[in-house]
Length: 167
Image 1 (spheres, rainbow, N blue to C red):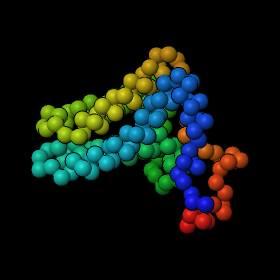
Image 2: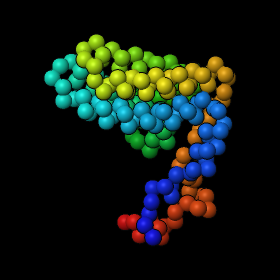
Image 3: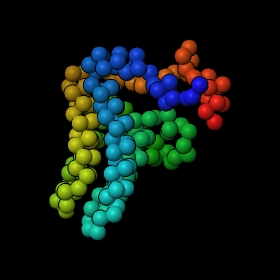
């Protein structure tokens, strides 16, 4: 029996999240997508021969900051300074996350001044996250965690034997 990544994904939880119409969940999902976009497209834009390189570096840094904001578990397992942890913990409400994503999107929109590149996709993704968190804030929706990854205590979570087979 081969191990499939889909065994770790909670499809029922994802459908429940979609039906909840809680925009903070949508913002978090787009945040996960933004992590990948910021890092991948930031690296891709390092190979330009003009000032876009600076925006590529900023995009990589933004991706890493979003990683710690959207996956707060990493704050506990990674050795980080107290200042950084305090900075990240400021963004625990929908309103502050909306402002944070909007500010980061504006920075990436500024890259268009130098040259139109794939960083525009990063800016649009950040804008979608900002809009989702802003709608959640205006509707007074509670900040909610998402259920994309299965809980290890679930009965259908892959057990040690399956993981050993994969290795």
